[in-house]
Structures are given as C-alpha cells and as structure tokens.
Length: 116
Image (cartoon, rainbow, N blue to C red):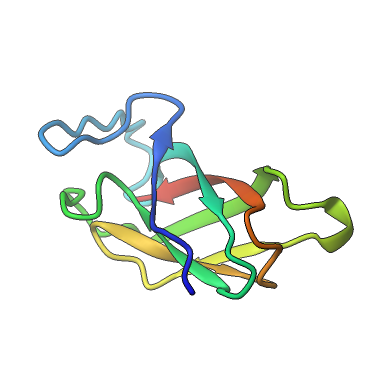
C-alpha cells in the first residue's frame, strides 16, 4: 500500500510550472521562499509520502535548503497523533516521513515552509 503523492496548495503567491515569483527581503540568501499546505489520505500502513512542490514534474528554480512541516489538521484522531518530518528534498518535491502509519482513510493536513 502507499499514500498517493500530495500536490501543494500555497497560502500566497506560489510557484507554477510556468511562473515562479519570489519576494526576497535581501537580508539573507537562506530565507523563506514559499508557505503552503497539503492533505494526505492515509492508508493504514505507509509511513511516508511525496509532497510535490508544483505537480511532481515541474521544478523550482532552486533546490530548497530545507522544508519544515507540521501537522495542522485532518481527521487522524489526536489520541493516535502522527507527527511529520521531511527529507530527500529536490527541485520537484520532498518526502514527508510520518511517525506512525495512522488509520486507513484518515487524513493529515500539513503546513510547510520551503526555505531557499
């Protein structure tokens, strides 16, 4: 079993396949680039899924230095809480690792911050 890849939804101007606009403050080369959310439907067995930054094919114009993520909602019960972390970051997405498999058909909504 596996959790289907999740495509990001952005809270502000996010990247698209044909348009990527970043608003930099000029204070640092390592700064926040994009903020968004994604919702994964759990399968009761898998402990990871792919978060696509755009669509899984189109790439960012940079490789993020980090992607911070946290659970902000969904239907997974608080009594069996699942936390998240990210790794394997590329220009197209990253892997979100779960602390536990969660319950089949429950959802996890995550908020994430892509750092340039």
